[in-house]
Image (tube, rainbow, N blue to C red; front, side):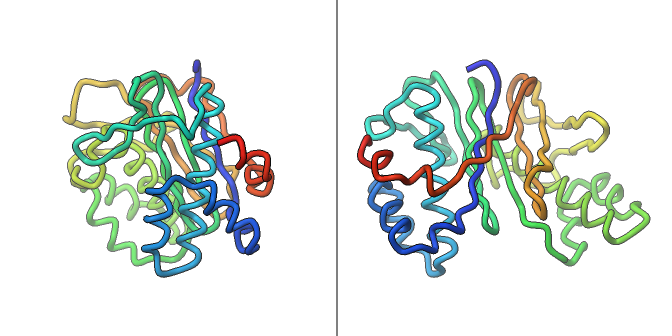
Length: 231
C-alpha cells in the first residue's frame, strides 16, 4: 500500500431491516456482542457500518477478513498480527469511516453542531486561544471541530488514545497542519477532508500522507448477499 485510504459510508440504509440483518450476520462475533450492548439503534448501525467498511478495506489490502487475526496494543487498539498494514475506525452522525495505511494511522469524524465553546479549554492553551481569537462564532466553531478531529486522529495514531491528555500536545492549524508533542520521535502528518457536508474529518499518519484519498462507498453495495457470503 503506497498511500493512506479513508473509506466512508453513510449508514442510513441500515434502517432497512433486511440490510441491518445482513450486516449483523456478516459481523464478527465480537462486533455482534458490542452491538448488542448498545442501547440506541443509531449506535448499532454505526458500529455495524464501521466493521463493514473494515472488511472492505482489508480486502483492498489483500486479506480475507474472516480469517484475519488481530492483536491489541496497550490501550486495546487493534492491529493486524502480521504487521503488514494498519487501520483505524471512527463514526459520528450518519457516517462511518475506516482508514488504512502501511504505517500507524488514526482517523476521526465529528458531526458539526452547536456546542459550549468552553470545551476548548480542555485543549492546549494556545489552541484554545486560537479558537477564541476567531472573529465570529461560526469560525470559532469551525476551528474547534477542526482541532478536535485532528487531535483525536493524532491520539489514535500514537496508540495512546484518550490516555493522552488533550492539553499535552498542540495542533497547529496552518496551511499545513502539524503537531508539537513529546510522545515519541515520529514525524506525524495530517490530512483533512471536506467531502462530508456538515462533518469535520481528519486522519493522521506516522509517515507520509501524500496521495491520501477519500473513497465514499454505498453501504447497500457493501452488504450485497454475495459480499457477505464470501467471508
